[in-house]
Length: 96
Image 1 (cartoon, rainbow, N blue to C red):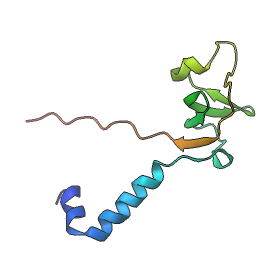
Image 2 (cartoon, rainbow, N blue to C red):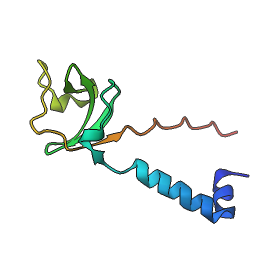
Image 3 (tube, rainbow, N blue to C red):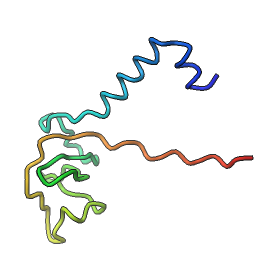
């Protein structure tokens, strides 16, 4: 049974799965952001930036050079919300 078929056969499981996915997509208050060095998404007045907490500051990661001046951390607006990074895409299976 495929995951789609399993959800279709069990409406309560489908609803719980949808609620769980929606919760993962919501912005959380910055006060609850992890400060253990993992990369997360931050929302600022400048937009969305991938950052990690480092030495007492939110440090933009190399993939977000638009928020970095090349010398040090630059976030011109304090972040107000955060969200975990989504998982990477799954590799596509080669069709037979």
